[in-house]
Length: 115
Length: 113
Image 1 (cartoon, each protein chain N blue to C red):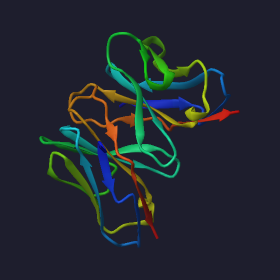
Image 2 (spheres, one colour):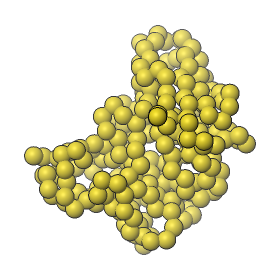
Image 3 (tube, one colour):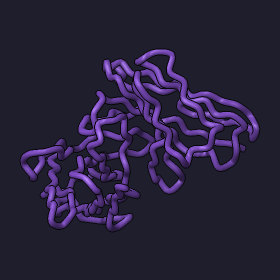
Image 4 (cartoon, one colour):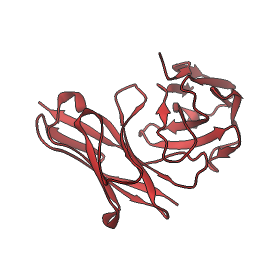
């Protein structure tokens, strides 16, 4: 069975500082990995995803993530935080079984941006 | 144009009632999903459905039933509502395939009194 662990339910950074949100996964097959963002009282929006190929994935709003198979990690980074980045971030995994599979989500990380 | 829409946005009801949440997507996707987000913001898949199969998360009570009149709609019907059903319910859609991006609706906040 697949699972996702997000270290840190809350992460606080200063505006302009590096953002690092950690995600580790467990999967019995090569996984597909996703990062979603949820702004208050809204649905989830895809930031980026890894399927195959290049392990460094660039997404929207300046975010990127690197798939590291040896570490079973898919950490999300952004070089310089902006106040508008304050939101809940979810890492998710989907196993490649080919069916109508849902995503398995981590518990989320609440990103706080200090002015 | 709204890609994935849900109605209603808020639903307040009494224990024991039956209610439905509607979901529509205009993306031409063939697979739709329902997720439940609890008070701690944990998201869990409830159902996934395409024109071939319905996959049910085994932890979902049979009081919950998805109904799909066509490929663009997947409604969620809940019988005999309980206090523990209070949550935000999200509909999502995608093309079939586990690498496909799922697009989420805005959510329906259900409160059971």
